[in-house]
Image (cartoon, rainbow, N blue to C red; front, side, top):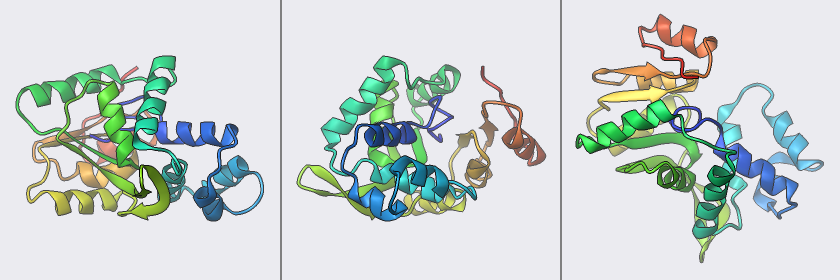
Length: 213
């Protein structure tokens, strides 16, 4: 399962980034990536050209200086406030797969620690999460990224590196998920938020589309 937009209804990594910038937290790694000036404006300018890897890298770096426990608490607070919520039908399917004895994995461009925190909040028993990491100094995340940022073909490479066999079924919500979705042994299901670009692209590849409102 993809996470942002698939298992949950928003991009939790970006939400954390925006809140830490608004709080004035020291984020030297993010500053080094985005350059001088208004940090939020620099982040939004960096998204021009639709380079998802840059987005996910920035959102990962927004956790610099945080502890794993602090990150867990931050994600829990977002759910408690209602700022982030599950896409209930998809989460129900994921739980059903887990209860039937299948391994459920989250494959995401988001920081792996965030994916693990999200799984805890939606009460989803996962075999693991595949995403990038930040190296730690003591009990704090640094700005040193470990592992590739997973988008498009990167998700395929990461899954093949972890598993010898392809996934049984894949769920995703954006065109960046399509390369991985094409690996599904039984197939895949697109769960975009509307009937726009993703729905058209998935249907063109013979992937069923479920619009969940």
